[in-house]
Figure 1: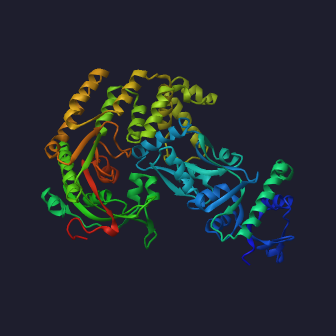
Figure 2 (figure 1 turned 90 degrees about the horizontal axis):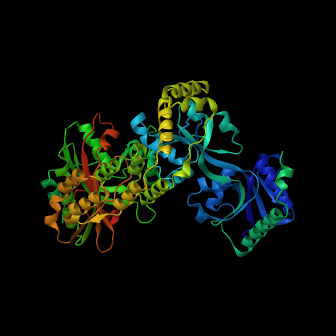
Figure 3 (figure 1 turned 180 degrees about the vertical axis):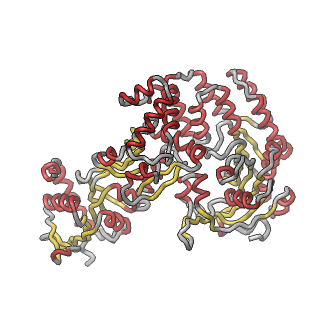
Length: 246
Length: 366
């Protein structure tokens, strides 16, 4: 059994459809085992690969722990949820779909705040003015901390937000937010603006190899062949997303 | 050799402090940055607790709870901080003076006490590095830099990379033109009419469903917007930037300090006599104890945390460069922790090494 690898792919929605389409184009056609419940799958004609259907955040976690060999997940989730991800994650192949940016956004009526430097000014005076530190609502603790540290900002507090983060400033739960956005329309609808230098990460769906998985020469060959095939197909046909998107 | 007699002789009371503390005071004062280094857990009713990352804040909280006017405290034990390398458990001892208004005397005494304390931990050759946030802010004021710029420099003080970035910004001011506003806001801002702009912002916030008084107020936003616009239009003379740069690289021994700073003041036409005299009073007690000790004042040495206000110092092993102690004056910390008025405070911490090799420098207290 050590000669098989586990490939984890998203279990629903557009991410799953796009992933299966990319894999099929590269010659790996995914089939489900066990009908409608379909948590396991296989690749037609390729017994060395077992498919696990998981959520994107489970996939990044399992890659970090080395319990799956290869997986499709968002770059944002890898960088946010896998501690010391550079050590645990090997090859990363961007797949050209699932584009979204992790950004820092403030109320659009903060007309005096356009850059991280402005935010630094505001954060520094916050305690004296308001009796508390600036609050940032986000589910991206690690990305937020690293980004603000890189801008020399330490005087703030994170308020954990697991949903509807964009509503936190208007509701008085936080002053600014760090969230993921693809078109920016949700931010706009909530009267928030992205700071000029406030893009923390440009994320997209990626095919990712774990460093921590139990690799053998044989399984590594299987995985490398798979990633190479998808990469070649992407090179041949980079516009495939436009054709498949709706 | 034990530090306990030394600290008792200096008038200190030994505090036995708990290892677990509410996490919030650490986060509110040192900011989110410390969270990554702290070990945070939950108490029985869901409250956030932390293994103490330092002793200073617990000592300050103890002082505030005690209700006494002034106190001298010392402590010893393990602190818990995540590091990239090495153990997360380190032993520390230290001494804090809270509520004494004789700042110069207290600072001078603490410097001497820290040096003697480090010496008694067995360090023979040490290097004492001294900085003064008060001197730097006096220079910023003497240069008549706009307030917003003074605050930026103050915040970055001690972080060379950030200071450099700020100086670059001053040298290339075109980098950040203020953004254009939409017409209605622009009309209100155009007359530099803060009230009109405030009123318009307030109206918009309400229309957008923002809770009033929950975050930044329209007055604050309007005022800072107009200030920033004015700032953009003010050119900062290149000579002032040159003075700043020259100051930040200035180094001197205590003996030559007054002369060097005097010379600096005359050369660049800034009057720093008063803050320099204040700094000199703090160094008085050091010169007599000069054996095995190299003292250097570095004008650019400071700490970016906003509760430090005056003298800062650190002691390193002269041979290896290992940090052995650090301290300074933090007159703003107690107010941040809930005091209803400013309370003068200063102190230092001596590193006693990784906790597993720690034998109890106070002489078997813990």
